[in-house]
Image (cartoon, rainbow, N blue to C red; front, side):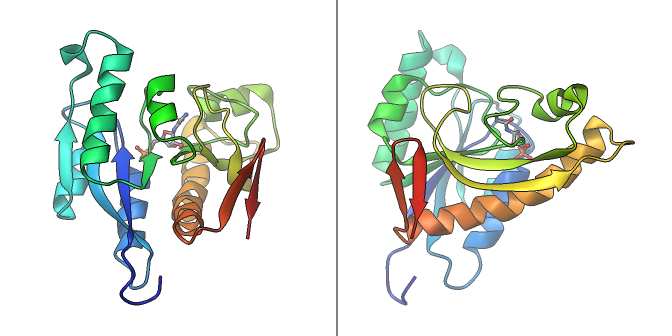
Length: 206
Ligand code: GAR
């Protein structure tokens, strides 16, 4: 970011621990990082992610899915919250709900997510457990644009990690998580600097 330029406003969706949110908050605190988190929204009242947001002085909101008739109505409420705060990029960071087409359409090309596997391998829940059960020797992390499928959007960045014979779900998850925390801010920077173009399934990086 050149000095004086307005940083890109990020809206983060998180359901739990929020370690990826923390990596994003830490990156945003670095001088010259071209983005800042304007709001964190969770579908779980007790999500640690909300505490992390408050600790960083960022607005934290719980929106209860039970207050809405259906998935679309909840997602439209998210759209309203982000639009009201002029969010330029939505970051799904451990948000354990599939975003419906109404949300993805409203923020077309402006929603990114992180997944603990080398997509398209092992989408969905418990990716690390799936990788261990399959017997792969290499696992990893992916940051991707979000579409209305499950972890199916165009891939921005990936990093691999080895799988060791004595790995458990916990040890492998921890190794992958380090890469998630590195990749996610890198991808946000690329987006904020206008260096990403989606061309079909591919993301071109300038
Ligand atoms: C992360 O490992 C993220 O990749 C995964 O949930 C975890 C959230 O951790 N997301 C998915 O599996 C999405 N399909 P965090 O709350 O500490 O960031």
